[in-house]
Picture 1: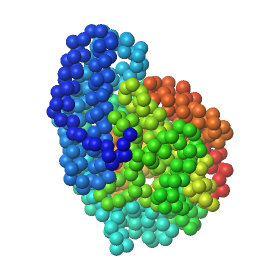
Picture 2: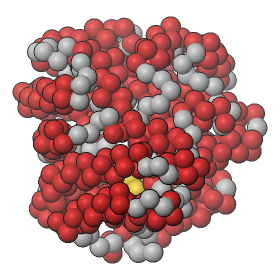
Picture 3: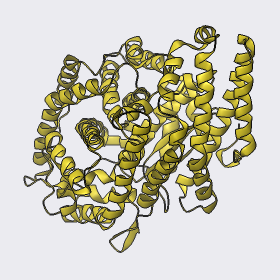
Picture 4: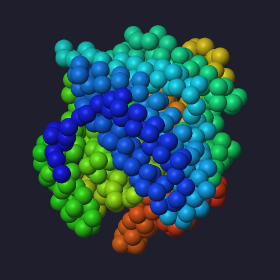
Length: 561
């Protein structure tokens, strides 16, 4: 094993792509299962190399978007990834049509072949140039948000670094911080609009070339969704409106009373307690030390995993100049380790993002020895269960981070998760409306967004900020630009994570055992089957959402805030 800094980056050159074609030809010329399986494993090694180099490039580029070398290499991968994907599609078609398919299914599982069939629907040679252009446009959004230098109190900050000021105790300072942050978006509104307009048109063009009437099903295919579709998601969103939105309205009324503000505005949204929100008491190094102890105590597996992450510098967590916004976990297959990227800002968000991304990373670590990446590469509505549930399993150790404010921190974490679900549904329904009507103008899209906000988050009052009043808030959401139709997966997963939370409060060990089952299955089962095997109820039945809402209200009543 190597430290992250010592992992060598090698650009996949033209010989690499020639090797892919040779392997495809070899596979097609062989007829014996053993020989074809050997070639499949050779192709798997090529895949692991390409993904590892792509991930190394992406990590180092997002750590410093001004790094000229990795900026250039990022562009190279944007150009070459469609070619790689198309070669994989051709190989997968040969695998699907192999006379030995049943033997492959017996060895690797039938779900793998369903995933391949779904993935292949989204690729052909006609769209390769379009895919490159789409990725370039999405990367423009990343560069634009990373370029933010927000003037506030005679200093310059990036978007992540503004978060503490947007929740500070002084109301006029909160307003200034919110307005300064969204002034960056307002000043660049034409750029944000232009990038998104081109993305919508490009994705619609791709969908038409693939034989679809619009991009929606292509987006679902990209997410690898098996066992449910647009109607199921719509039913879920409606249940959220019916059972979760009323809880958020009650929470806002309590928040108004708690902070003694009745003319509640947008800049009060992140201020939850008189005297300020709870925040971790330690500096960065001490926070990591306490995290090591927490994962030592949680389980043998989490201890080994997190100590490996620390020993080999497999995370970059501090916010800094020219660093991309947000947080993510990615995987380096050749080294069989994950990597965590985040932007700590000194708020409770630091603990949340660390435990969340650690949930993703832990799953990648648990499934690192699977034969095929396709059997460990879970879809996001499953992956987010791992991450969101890890947030709750670590509640047992929150006192080490928050001292006397522990209960307040747990309550804040819980209510933020509840507030987030209707927002996630807003993002999802917005994208459905946009891709159904790709001809909408920028102004019309903002109007659609604002109307949806009134349905899902009716308490939001943007009076005094024209950009937000006119429906611009969505432009801060990276997923809308980079990963269309991803965001609802968070909401689906959150419903499952609540089930782990409720069970853990009754019987922690049993709940953890179910969580480990979920992890160990990897991607070998379809979504609904995987939930059942891990003793989780589906989010697509209204009665289950109703039950979750009732349990949430009961749990909230136990907190005295």
